[in-house]
Length: 230
Image (cartoon, rainbow, N blue to C red; front, side, top):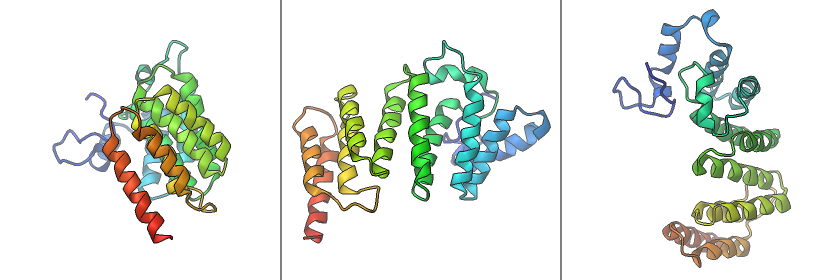
């Protein structure tokens, strides 16, 4: 059977995502643990921990997997999709790398050390796979910027978002994510800064880029929050 990502629809036709349906069944039916690749075992262990809502432990497991994967990456791998050849499990490396970034962010809400780990992981990913498609590179770089804000490193977070805007000037979510850091601070020690959020949203609104409806929605939400807290 060809590889299928955990977030894709299951091949059995249930209409559920593969990770919620036949993933565990296939892994237990097709392999015994002792005969499976060590990487596949770590992949499954992390997924099992996530299903138990043990996000931090899942991230620790997957970071071990990431370290082991790196020893198999080849210098000519500059796009993460090229790394599929070194992993024999059911998961797609392309999808899993994005899942790890997301779960590190979730773990960070409970323990800020995972925001630091998220930054380190995403920076390493970008160095290893600079030719990956724009979508995943944008997400990784945005995660770095957001994590700095979550840690209270506003200067570094702003610098990261400025670089993101320069790299992807036509991506409206560069601006939306940046403004959101002020409208909905990730670090609860800080209050919303409506003026700064509005400034960033309007910066994008003045440009001829797609997604203006999303910007207008953000500005409307900003006005509601400002009125509520007046």
